[in-house]
Amino acid sequence: MSTRFTESCGCPDSAVHDIKEYKELNITHFSRIESMTDYMSLFNKLSCKLHGCSSFDEYIESLKKFVILMNPGEFYFCLCENWSEDFIEDNGNIRKNESFPKTYSDRMIVPIAYTDGEFHDVSFIERWQLIPDISDEADYEKFYYILPLHFGERCLGYMAINNCHVSLHNAMFQGWCITINNSLENIRKLQSLDYAVKKLGRLYAQDTFSGIYNRNGFVLATTDIFNSCAVEKRSIMLMFIDLDGLKYINDTFGHDMGDVAIRSVADVLNRSCINGEIFCRFGGDEFIVFAADYTDVEAAELTYKIQENIDWVNRAMGNSFMLSASTGYIIAVPEKGEDLFRFVNQADKVMYETKRKKKLSKNLRH
Image (tube, rainbow, N blue to C red; front, side):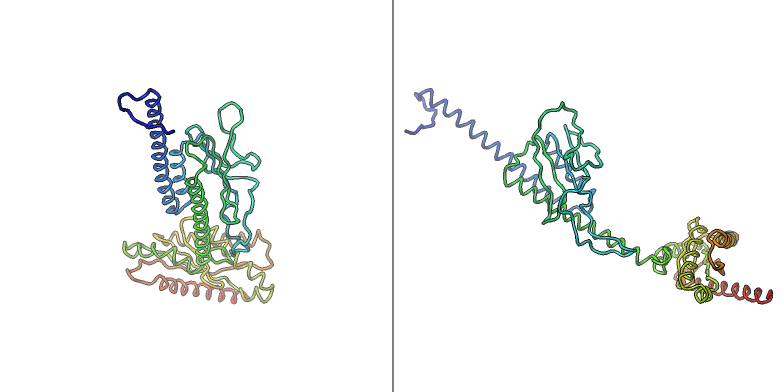
């Protein structure tokens, strides 16, 4: 026997009661569908936003906005301490890390900790804690959903959610979890690529032997300043420095001591060039220093400071050789379109004349 839902006159009271329940049921179902539609739209927007992030900070800020809209009682986003490591530095070289975390680290980073409508700053927690102890509520048993974050076999971390207004038992939320995992892996790869590019850039610009700029790095660091000086008719200073007697050091004390001598000159320049000067190992036993808006007095003072620091090395380091270097500098106003290395060659000639006079003086003394 079936019930006919109607409001026609003369219907029994029970029919009217069934109609009200039917309406309430329809409204409830409609509200749920409408709510799911809203959340589905929200999830789709979040997915697009997360996959479009280009940095970890941007990723976390985007995820925080979604957490606010979810309005959970508590939400914790916990990452393994080594979740993003993809490269290893080995004696100045970088290589891909073939191993990756397959379980949670002893300490977990917590970039998002949300309770009672507020975000809290939590740097990390110990693994055994599982969630940060920041709730003001009295101690009582709580139920948390712990959702792992992973990509393939790589363990990234986990999310912990308590008292969420969004149903966590449907395909929509499962799809959102997959989005989090995939987009987090995308950020990890972007970070690894950015690290590799920066590291390779440093290797391209840095003399790995002495630790200071190489010729490529020198050009990158000075080009804009040099061009600006040419346009604005400002002076530049170019100093050429040549290590004295490197062949003698190598032949007498060994190439290891020759290496020490080269690194010592680099250390001298690090100690001496403290007013914005740019310097590099030009090649072999040759070094150059560049500065803008330098006067002849300042260049002479820098020459004296370099010699002072060379003397300090000879007193303090106890090397089996005496460190010595010849210097020469020029001050000029470059023309627009001129090549920086034309001035390097000029400074080299001045240095060579200084070295020649030094040798002549030494021969006369003997």
